[in-house]
Length: 99
Image 1 (tube, rainbow, N blue to C red):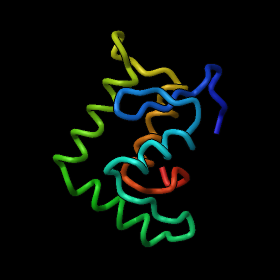
Image 2 (cartoon, rainbow, N blue to C red; image 1 turned 30 degrees about the horizontal axis):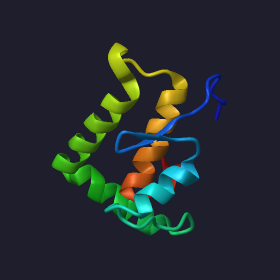
Image 3 (cartoon, one colour; image 1 turned 30 degrees about the vertical axis):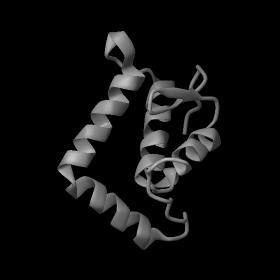
């Protein structure tokens, strides 16, 4: 993956974290599902399918993340896309390498 020119931000429930590990720790203290291990391809695929098939949850999470990351300009820069995708993976409990 091409490294973004700007630092990646990790936003969870409106709060910004400096690293993905900090964002995951914040999620672990909340109501998010525990992550599936990277080596568990079947588990990650099942979690992805569950997310895609739950239209309400999917649309709500994507809308919330897009609003938090895009800001007033309603556009995403590369570093914002990276943070959004990694936080979405953390929130649905899949390894970020699957996105």
